Length: 313
Image 1 (cartoon, one colour):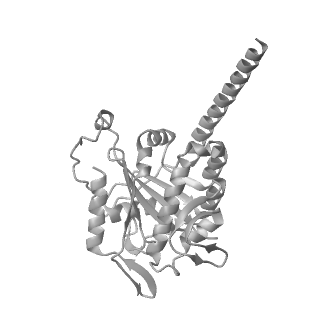
Image 2 (cartoon, rainbow, N blue to C red):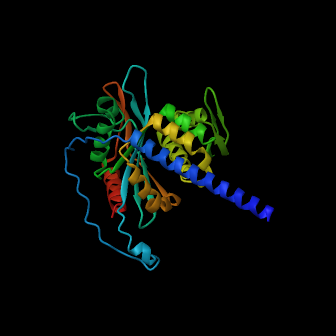
Image 3 (tube, rainbow, N blue to C red):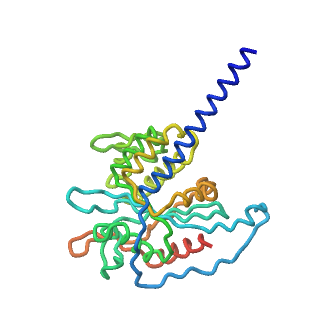
């Protein structure tokens, strides 16, 4: 009888601790989302963005719950901001994701930071990463939307120092490195390796020693982002959540709300298992007026625009 009471008391204490920790996490997550939430004022683009009218379809492989799923596809813009001293900084990493909950797929496009395009709101052309210096997140948001001719629903910007802190909080990120190379501080052998925060930053920034140049850098960015997203959505990090939230609170800005995040977890998480990478590969990098730009191939741009639009049906 005494042993039975001890067991009941122990279980009760354990359940109380779980409930208390869950409540703490709930309040912490909600407070963090409120702290980093930033409504965006978007400039009007120079040309109207119109998506093809979606045609509802079902396939035999869809179960009844999927067929009844009215959750719409969404688009996200992920910005890695290189915050320079005494300057507004630049968008060093520009990734666009379309997430379709019905097909459970994600298309991820990395836009070369030197891409020559219209800077929305200023009515002139420049490198796309300069849009952040000219008008912060809102101007980059509008410029990307105009370039790709798709509506962007959400934007998440993180400064690169916060990126380093996030990786270290997660105890590193594992990637499958395709080419061996070294930087001034680190060596990156070929194969599966676990990178610390500073190592990850050096890993995604290197491009001059990559045979694919900036495209190789984009592929490395994709691998890192994929693995971070999967780690953040895993229950394995539950005890790291408070530290992760503190890092996010200090370094992230987004228009995603707490309610949005709950919907993401419920309806969009399965798509993380099926990410397709899109790249601009047929453009022309050259110097104009003493400045290096990347000029997109018009046909390739139209193809990618159409593929992204199709993924939002």
